[in-house]
Image (cartoon, rainbow, N blue to C red):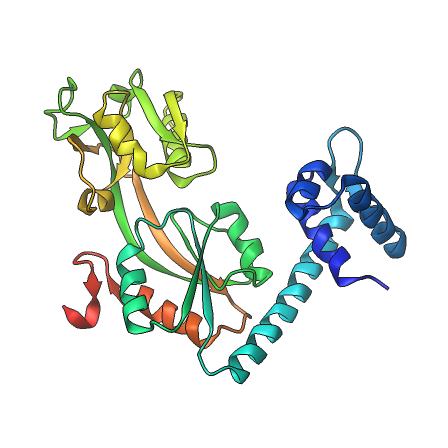
Length: 299
């Protein structure tokens, strides 16, 4: 009989496709994890991974992974439903996003309105969000790039232009707009691969047969504007960031391309049981006025 812990360990190996990294994340010895996967494959009567070269989840493994995610997700939903029904409060909400700078306003308003609810924030790349929602590892996800997956419901929160930030003394700083061709030889400060900002940059350049000249890749997105101001390069900056509390001496210039935009979308599982706390968070986020930075009812 397949053990619950074995299924959880399998999902980590399936996600990372690397035994030693999975063992590190699970805080167990790699030989023990290898035996668990081998025992699981023996019970199922088929390999779940291809082992020629790098470990790869095969078709049977992908099929099994999808069922395991849904099954464990339902168990977690049941646990949370019981906890909510038997507790005096209304639980915890788990929100995942690529960046939380955009969400500070509604998060602060939510905490003021519901101080007894615990909020768990999870940084997550967009490619992991569908999996995490199906597994009910998180309740809600906010993404700045499309998530093409079945079993999700969503609503767009806002769409905005993405411009280019550059130092005050940059030769193009006096312009009202610039083209991608004019930026072809400029040094860029940007996010690492997978983040929406980096994907947008790559997409804009590839469409014109160009490759961006990247001099700095960082995980700390809040530092991009500071690095631009310091003269290390230029970088794509969403219009929303211009309204942030932290201002640095730099200019924001529109990019002459209709594709230089982002749409921010809230996602949740179509068949998931959302707790009261999660439903209240969804209402707060969808009811936020992203132009004024206030709840819509307070306009």
